[in-house]
Length: 249
Image (cartoon, rainbow, N blue to C red; front, side):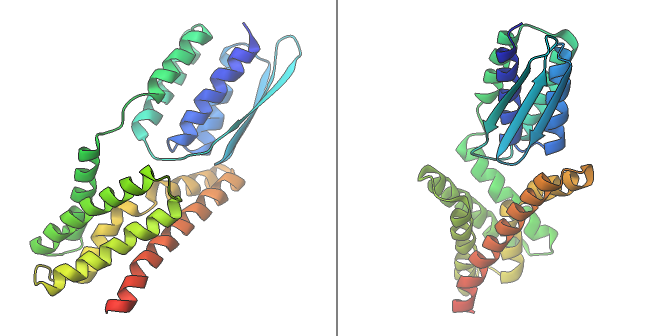
């Protein structure tokens, strides 16, 4: 076995896990089990939000290190589940590493939901939370439209490769502007409930949950980094909502 192929496979697996929203401790544990399954003496893995450092001690007493940079992060639990399943299966059956790399590439190329489905998901989430917070059906209808509009704006900003925090501020600004317009036209009853429901698709729930789980697991650096990212995202949402409201209410 060529150890550089093992490092390639481990780096690719860890990169895909982090890019799709996996917890830090899950990444480190998965990569360590992966390395030990292929006969190395020990493996030391350090994963953070923006990088992974992999060091293996081979059976021939070589010590090899690989660093992988993480430049983008999103949430795709379907890919995380498939990567976990592949890692468990690989540890049990130990296939050839080129086969593992091919499987990893196939998972990375899996298509996401279509744009129409994502727009519908945003709209349904916004309207459902508006009803959950005791808004009327008219409020839910307005939130449905606003949720769809937020996803369209977000998609266009992603196409322009805009800064993610700037994108969140702009998407959040759309919500009160459209809500106030609906309210003044008499279509909406509760401005606050529509806004609360419509911001729910933007709330960094997964990042916040993962940061707490990492902190509990003892990964303090990664946990604090994710917590800071979640707090910054929440701050951007508050700015995006608050600035238009300060002018129109």
